[in-house]
Picture 1 (cartoon, rainbow, N blue to C red):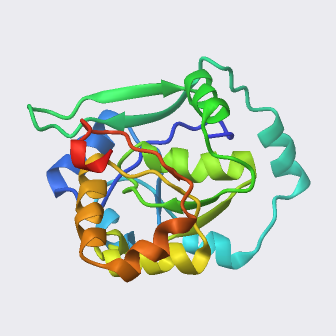
Picture 2 (cartoon, rainbow, N blue to C red):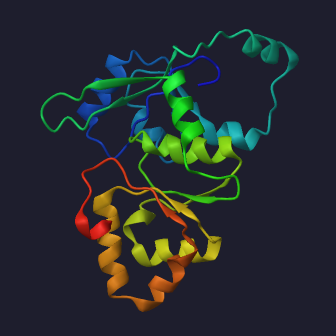
Picture 3 (cartoon, rainbow, N blue to C red):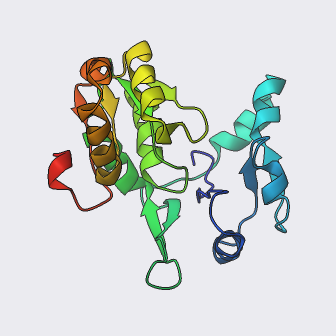
Length: 210
């Protein structure tokens, strides 16, 4: 996003037709993939960059590339990223988020410098940007779960304990399910005592989860 590009998150858990529709609607010029998603995304007619290879190469930008990047014009009103609605009432609708709005959210976010943030949400939801960028912008630490790990509450609570997580931003339905798990597991209750803030959003709140 700092390079002037617009980010549109996708999830390989979504149906093929939905992903194809999103890629077409945003007129994607490049798809960022990892080793797990490479084969799936390669079915679409869009250039691919495997970020796993970029990370492993340890190549830094040369002077010419740095100069080119520094000349990119990004204004507060430039589009930062695009997210799509679930499409439950029809065709998914694009929502454009501007840099101004995104940074306002980051600057007013309750993530603190000494927080340890659990990255919980799917990459297809805009809240994953709040978790990742919010933590990094504020100078906090970020903890990522294994694939599909958020469905395993024993694993989640153990990770919270092991990494001393202090900030978690779930949706209310997930929090409700976690609450039921904690009610039945006293040991798991002890594991989550390091969490100072449960930052709920994205859905209508459930009384049990508050």
